[in-house]
Image (cartoon, rainbow, N blue to C red):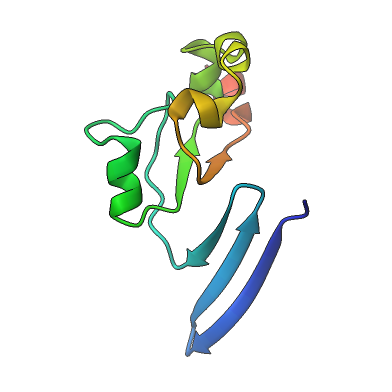
Length: 100
């Protein structure tokens, strides 16, 4: 499935849009909590859904260190590992790989 970004409305410099991703369609603007190692601290995934969270950001470098990409793969991927049915966004981790 191709990714799609569609602007739905504008007001001055602000815009509302729809971001279509493989696991979920997100409405912007949106809040994106960071689940660095595959978890959001202090909230369960059902609580995140209840408050309207549409997408979680993960850090590829930290996921590779812990819990490890092999474990995530064994458990069926990051969505299953996190028990998160909605969208996920991960960075490349390249900056940390070079710096650290």
